[in-house]
Length: 322
Ligand code: XMP
Image 1: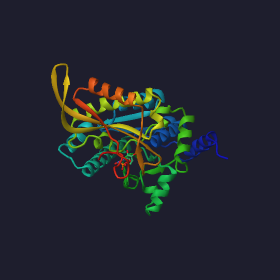
Image 2: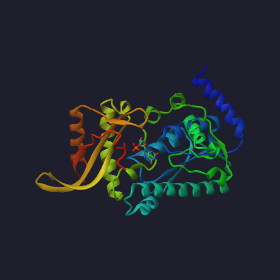
Image 3: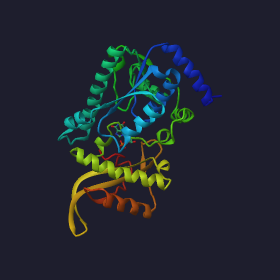
Image 4: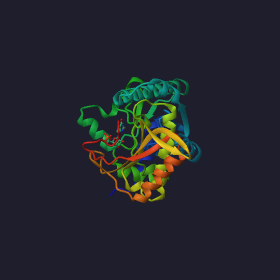
């Protein structure tokens, strides 16, 4: 008879027994699994935990600040933020193909993370690597014949790192399903926005700016997306819909602001209902709300002349545009 409190108590004891006075490093992405893993490890070993968060420049508005606020200020976790936005932008310059974007983003992430890890390992003698692996990940990796212990669970697949760098793994969520992970997170005091947040792809906004990725486009997308999330929250719909996000379309269209012609790009709204992301349908929300979101984006975000609604189901469309 599983209770969340029992699990936490027992796992805290196990973590302490495993690491003793050793130090643990954890890649924190802000996703549900790594967040709950951070809170649990912190409860068990406090200052012996160090979290590394890589700011790729492809995050949503205020995401990095919110992570700092929650983990460093509130939980008092030793959090090292690596600002790598310039590197990611440089690598992505002129790249249009979605799969190449993914490869570049994943590769840059591993490079930046590994560099930081090496620094911490040699300078500060950290020997354990925490991972937010959950039960479905274990099953998945067994199904593909991989060694689950050698896999890293993070928003990018940093495969092979623990072995290459001779880390011992700490994976306190290995036996949990997602809903149990959420219960643990809630019990540990993580806010609802973290525990129940919508899925967000590892490559972040990199696959939500169609075509060339530039800082300007990312900033426009961030502003539009923040308005959408704000309105979904206000309407009490954010947690009821699988994913709600904006996509930046580099298509010029004509608009007017006052008496001026505004020749600018397009924002698409993508709102989908789904159970497991394998299939999805576009979510129906009140027209008045769509109107408000559209008005706010076209009025408040410079660089957008038009908002369109994506009414495609998966299949044949995918949830993300890239
Ligand atoms: P699609 O677009 O294939 O997406 O219908 C299905 C789900 O997966 C997410 N997604 C990703 N997640 N890395 C991730 O970690 C990726 O490269 C990636 N691409 C899509 C998407 O947001 C949706 O929830």
